[in-house]
Length: 85
Image (cartoon, rainbow, N blue to C red; front, side, top):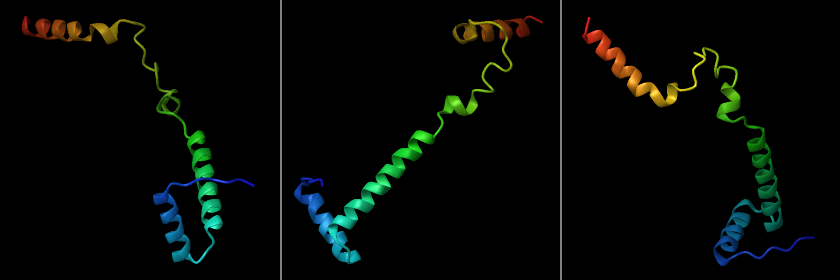
């Protein structure tokens, strides 16, 4: 058995919903908890963006580890080389 203290606003919403649905407040609370637990379980089963794309990362690797920090200079060099020809 569990007791829960609710603030006035939540208790009013609970009472209103139970009256509208013609079900006991305890049933509303139980249903809400089941729904909440299902949502948590589904969130844990969701893969992260990294997990979803991990097979593609590094697939076309250049073997260079400085490209993320030197890309601006690489672009400038290409533009300059194109303009000089």
